[in-house]
Length: 389
Image (tube, one colour):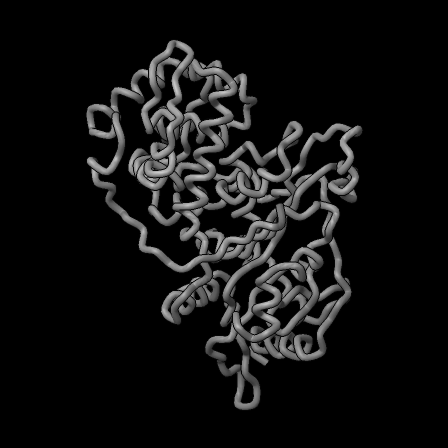
């Protein structure tokens, strides 16, 4: 399977999920019943988080957000003929299927471990989780989208500028490795071997100031550097053709204009639409100030990827012999779920402090020497503007 890319037209988030739009167990009492029984089965397997109740500690979201996700998954998960049951023979409701799949994604535990805690066979965990992945990929992809209106982009620019004063900035780009444990006898294993001698798959993301993923690419081997991944992406092609980041310019002075751009670390080439930090130690005051503001602003991308891996632990750490054709779709759905929690303005986010913004431990900072001359002049003008010169 080739790289998975996330960008679709906007569809309005339904803030209120109708009770009768959910399947069996979806009524207020039914919903409480399934959780009451499930919470007893998984008691002792979850460490409660400070400020969260047991439900929120398990799923890292409110019940309102969980119900919305159920409404997205309902049609796909219940349209097909398969009927899933617990080991006891009791049929699984929609809520229980979604809970099982999300627990698999969020705990990072094995199929057997998740199955034991839910009272289900490990093959059932696998089948239900994959059905859920298909459902959210089909019905939830609109939660990852590039800003479609001038109003949306203006709000993003304004929020970025409030962080450290970078004007006309439209996003922050970064990449992280999803590491895998592969058998050395596997024929294609070497394709996935990266510079750290890990087998890994790369995830590239452009993030807005609210840590929402606006564009994602995954499915490529982790041995590729950040700049190579970017150049293979649809984002790169659109920006190079002037079909993206082509909105309003702003005046820095009478003679100087600043186009729309995103920011990234030194692993990326300096381009007219992608500004990277200055390299070197002996920097002028204006260049050092630019780097300081640049880092403080782009850290939002690091935090988003760290939050993604911290909440959806299946893609954090070493995955045991994953299906590499399916893995990009698992990663994409984790990104969709990450955005749904943000789009639903879920208060649980406030109670989930990040332990670290380091999302790629063990991987050093890449450096790309490629510099576009036009971009270099633009960056110099911006750095002088930021220091009032």
